[in-house]
Length: 451
Ligand SMILES: Cc1ncc(COP(=O)(O)O)c(C=O)c1O
Image (tube, rainbow, N blue to C red; front, side, top):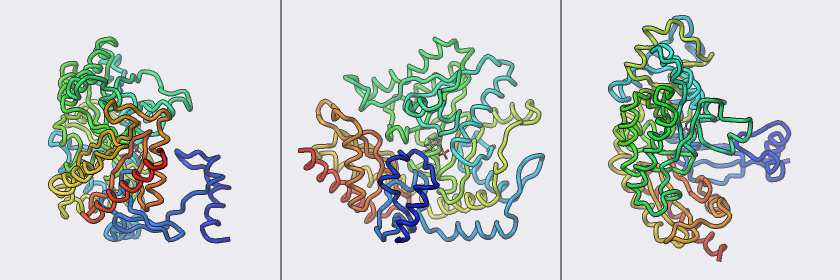
């Protein structure tokens, strides 16, 4: 038996894999990824791929950064574990909290650590409720979010998210979570201009607040740009209107920065990109560039003060909240992002160049729209370019293009008939050209197969 066959066999017998059709996996076997360097990964058969998805939207500094491995080893040798419960802390966690306060918006200076984005959003759910109880408005319980948003896979995370296939498994959402329209002009904008549609989608929030009664609404949660939903970049009119509404009704604004944070858009956070004033931000992924599991909730000063000064014991936390090894890795990762000017480079150089490169695909007969923000991009595949009509069996063309891209040596993601891009932020011009060239080949091959 080859090594690949051996690992696939173990996987078939003993693994149950996330977001995977485990029956199909029995038949097909898994790809076994054994190595990674810079923007490339390779499998156990020696095939090399350019990773236009940075793992799962997370390997912002690229693969193979030995500095990150070195700080992890050093921290493990020095002090592999201690926790933050009961008035203790560890140096890397204190340093990391300080570093995060420096890069987050000026009014946000405290962080609660988790191990993932899902746990961050579960923590948001509890903090928001706790906050309104402390402000003696316990009836403010409802959290409003959006259809097709993604906020993780734990019970609260999946409930806050608006993914109906997730809701169907397990009877979600849990009570007091409401979903409103998403600002997805390409699919749902009809004859409205993007700006008209953006205002309409934002006002869906106001309508729901008024329908529920403003004194029942605790918070609105959203990704600055929906990632898993399809890299949905809202029209320019959307976020200013949302900001007006949350302020007018005194509703907490929770910005899920799990994908948009740590330089993805060319700013440190999606909140900077759109000029938002969040009360809470969920972070994970790019915080450690995926080298170690860590996430968190960053709190506005006013919010933190209510919890810290009036809340007594905070009865929530995880054994690994602020794990010292993950914290040391995240701290070094932020240093790399900052000292190497990676975020600035995305804003000034690679982000605009990526937008131009994607535009070179816009005339392809399969392509209805291309869009990007920093190094987050999408290509919409359509049956009719003029009317934005989709192919009858939505998802088939996207999957076909994704599979053909893989044959070309390119990893990207397809959500329905939308191709998604989120490459490492260290991507150079040659690697960007490789992504575009391989995407074009996949589109051409898909087009000829569909004729
Ligand atoms: C916006 C957003 N929030 C939360 C999560 C959940 O993060 P995790 O998978 O680390 O639990 C994700 C994961 O993709 C995400 O994209």
